[in-house]
Image (cartoon, rainbow, N blue to C red; front, side):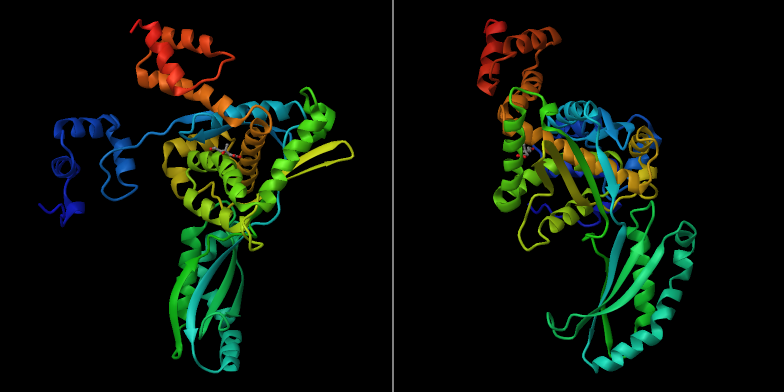
Length: 424
Ligand code: MEV
């Protein structure tokens, strides 16, 4: 029997769920029950979520956690994080506390320029195209004046339009390369609307517009965060050895792509969690970050480290195109709450907060990897997940956690201990 359907989007929510249950599940009743269990009782709130996308049938929960004790440029923050990976928030909290006792994080925004392109084909004379561009350039900016009016009031807008000749890469291919300042909004809609207006005005016989779209490659929307302290203040048994080993781990990720990808994945554990919590676009951030990590032609670490004259320094430089107004940031009540928790930051402040969350996460991972190994902390957090799966009570959990204190946690060992406790 075919599982295809036409007009699915026109069905009511209940009908969609029943069709799904009937078509793809064995236990239809149970399927409907699970889907509905995650509906919000508050109908208005549920409607808000239903309307974010097409064909919504339910909600998908992820934990919303908080990592307190971050100090960034002297300001205290509790950072909201949405993530399912058990150790991420705990690691961020530990590292925040560690560096809060050593001067905190210092961050600065390097640049905030975003790019959009009108891609077009032109087979005619290059000089004619150049003079046509010079002739209409002011008019292209003028064509966006209604769209850019409010943005200009906020100090943003179109910074420049350049004509780029790409014919060496692809026959007849040119582009209008437009740079934007979008202040506190991520600016995707704004940029795309401007580009479409520019393309419309630019159109002429002989010019075939292919598409107009922003770029998620944002190497000029760049932020840096760093920590530093005297090597001796790093603590532990042998801080010099720790600092050197830690820096070697970073250098490995600077030269070895297999390691760099995992190293940067750990950074993104911290960043994506804040991107999600604040209602930003994690796909855009991910795409831009990894492209930046490959800007030299080889995929490299986004963090760097030095030990010089007795000073340990660890920093990140990362492109982040974010918004603190517009889009989901004002629509999703939890995104709004996250931004309130962060004291309603500007987009520039949010860039510094996120870069810091990424740096903190990378510090936690490298500290664990170069000392006790990663599984020690991971499995500790995993212990609670395993116990929850086993249906352990709060007192079981307490007793088993005490038993595993100082011992290696493995799935099999936890199951065995649990069974023993339950006399099975
Ligand atoms: C796991 O989610 C992230 C790490 O693998 C990062 C790293 O290896 O640096 C621990």
